[in-house]
Image (cartoon, one colour):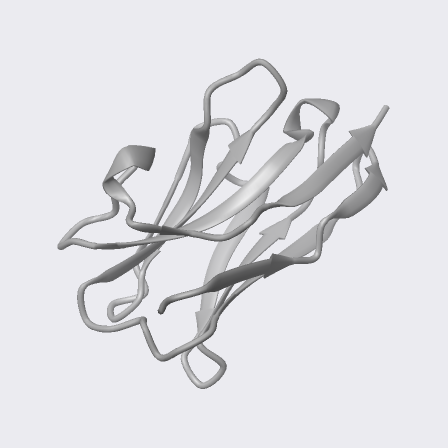
Length: 125
């Protein structure tokens, strides 16, 4: 059973930083693994934030976070990180990590098969 566990959320002032972690319970990240970070604000649909190809390390970002957020991985720890800098109130949401098997980074939530429970990020103005 694959489990993804997010951590690192919290309350931060605008302009601040947070680092989210997504740890897999078993060695589930392999050649075709894509790990994505998504977020969902109240009353809004879940949206893609960033993604990484586990084997190649290539990344992709939504336009709203490009230049502020960085996704990375630690192969030894089976963990994916999302470093969030220059946070804005509009970044407030529950952040989820998810896993898919594909040859390219996917931005559609329904194409991911395993999800974490989410971690709350709140940015105050």
